[in-house]
Image (spheres, rainbow, N blue to C red):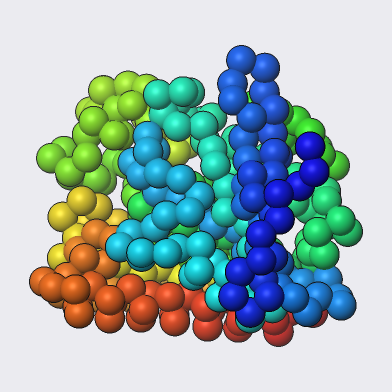
Amino acid sequence: MPDRVLILAHGVSVSADVIYSTIPGYRPLTLDLYRPAERSTALPLVIYVHGGGWMNGHTRQSGAFSDFTAVLADLSARGYVVASLEYRLSKEAPFPAAIDDVRTAIRFLKGNAARYGIDPRRVAIWGGSAGGQLAALAALDCGREPGGEDKSHAEQGDCVQAAVGWYGVYDFSTMPQSAIPHAENAYLDCEKGACPADRVAAASPAAHVDAKDPPMLLIHGAQDKVVPASQSRELAAKLEAAKAPVTLEVIPDVGHSWIGADAVATRAASLRALDLSFRFFDAQLKAAR
């Protein structure tokens, strides 16, 4: 069937539900691809990975944003190709299926760089909550032979040049027992507290920190009761110790998904996180030609 292309504000076009991976026994995995009206040259790529406890969520939703497709279109209008992708959820296939899918998507997009107008040397990944964990893991543990069931575009690397994490889980070994054990158990496919140490480490971005890691921006709400802000603080400290570039922003008086005491506080924190993230992409990708 022909591609389903929609036109949003500022002339941004969206190719909806582009299939990037087909694994026998599973549903086809798709992504939405946003491209600005003006694209005479290859553009940097930003990949968004949704949250939802690894068991829910979709490509067109994030936190309290009422129209997240408009947010992604606004980012694209700044001069980016933006991809928002699905991955296998934990009840479909537990770890490492989701991170395998994220890496497959990175290779797919790089392998189709000429078709989509992407500069494969300028790629950033961004995610929130569970998507923050996946984005950080993709950024900090890359460069291996393709794993999982889909090894397409194996000639393409899966490393990125920058990463943004919003309120993500970055070290499963230090997550409080009372936080989100059901979601963690389903994702890791083992009971919290009884998971093999090597499996916990493999899924924890903090266990993969080294000096070669790309620049990272970590943003967290100070009052987050779902994923404590200590997760971002601890990862930032490890990156700093390794002399890897990192910026940490803890937004006061808001919790998970930038939810504050009222709609005004939630909106202010959401817009602050967006502004910091978009400026970070500009600094890391538009200067790196």
